[in-house]
Amino acid sequence: FSYAEHAELLTAAGARVVPFDPLRDERLPEGTGGLVIGGGFPEVYAPELSANEPLRTAVAGLAASGAPIAAECAGLLYLAHSLDGQPMCGVLAAKARMSERLTLGYREAVAVSDTSLAAAGTRVRGHEFHRTTIVPGAGPEPAWGLVHPERRTEGFAQGDVHASYLHVHWASVPGAAARFVNRCASPAG
Image 1 (spheres, one colour):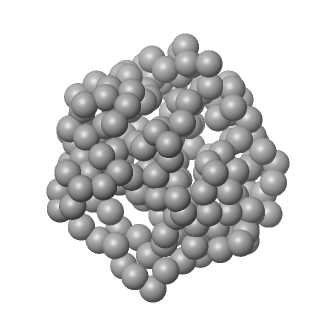
Image 2: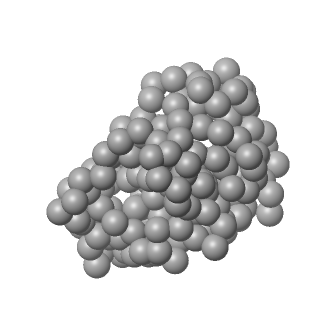
């Protein structure tokens, strides 16, 4: 799942958007300077995602290089150490698993620190929709401080990786796409 406008906004900000398939492609597209991993249902494909070790290694290497990565929901799970015991990219020191509980609803949040998507203090609205849990639910530097419907921290802001359950429509955050593209051109190493 991703908003079509994200690719349009990235293109308008000067990026060359190149799709790839994490189930089949064993490497990132040539010249990848940043990565956006949208939502979906990775738990359905956990064995296939795990089996694609060359791509998992490439994603981890990209993160380690300081290139910006924006991951939401399924992307968050893909960057985790594991999903239901299956190895994932290992970028985040977190483990994810399926849950019987559906988490669903609109959220209001504030960026806790500067990331490739938002400056600290930026207010956003988004939604959560998942049947998974991740432990821990937030890193030492969380991506978001949720303010509605409950107060809690959520996600990971690690290096130039921004990973969270929160789906945010970038058109509602002026400058998010341009900020991401600028970080692609000169990653914070």
